[in-house]
Length: 283
Image 1 (cartoon, rainbow, N blue to C red):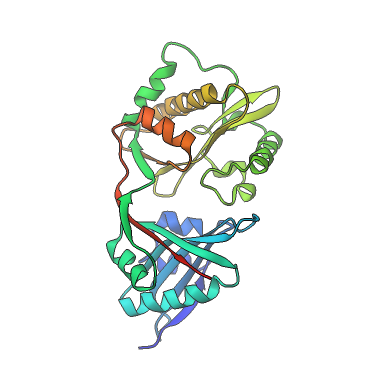
Image 2 (image 1 turned 120 degrees about the vertical axis):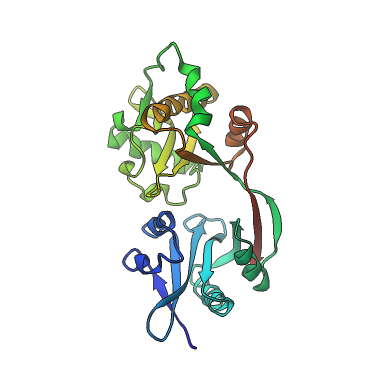
C-alpha cells in the first residue's frame, strides 16, 4: 500500500487523535510546533509526527525536538522519518533530539540514525498533595503585597516583562514566549513579583486541556531574586491547594540549575520517569 505525507496543523489535527493526544494537539497552535501525518489511499490517517523547533529565531544553530512519532506500522513511521528529514532542511535544522518513555518510538528513531540512551527524565510530576508543604511556607502570614496573581498584572507590564526576559535570554521551556498572550496562562495559579509597576519575576503555569498543569517559565531578576523565587512558589502552591483537589498533577522541567536546586530542595524524593533519549546530526 502507498502512503501520502501531509502537513498537520490546528485545522486538521483532530483527524489524528488516534496518534496525538489532546494536550499535544493544542501545541500545534503554537509558533514553533510542526506536524506531519501519513494517510492511506482512502485519505484515512495512519500515522503522525510532531516536533518543535528550538533556537529558530536566535543566532544559535536551530535544533528540533521530536515530540511524537506514531503509526499503524513501522513502514509508515519510516516514511514519516524520511519526510521529516526533508522538511527540516527548510528550517536549517542542524540537530534533532528526543526524549520519550515510548520504547517502540525510540527504536524507530535508532533505526533512523539516532543515538539511544536510557536515563531519568528532566521532568518531574508532583501532585497537589505534594505541594501542600510549600504552601505551608506562607501559613500564618500573608504573602508580601508585591507577590501577585497574574490576573492582577496589567497587560503592558506583562509585555514589558516578556521583553526583558527575552533580552536576558530567559524563556523557560517556551520557544514562543514572545508570541503567547498573557491569557494563555492560568491567571490565578501563576504568580508575579511586581514593584513600582515593574514585573521582575514570574512563575507562569499553563493548564492543558487534559487538566495537567505545566510550569512554563520560572525566573526572577534583581538582588532578591532567590527569595522571590521561593515566595512565588509558595504563593502559587497556596493557590493550587485552594483551587484544585488532590490528584491534579503539575509537571516541572528541571531545565536550569536554579530550577534543579529548588526541586531538589522541595521535592527531594521525587524522581523523573525512566525515558529514552538521543540525538542525530542533520548536517
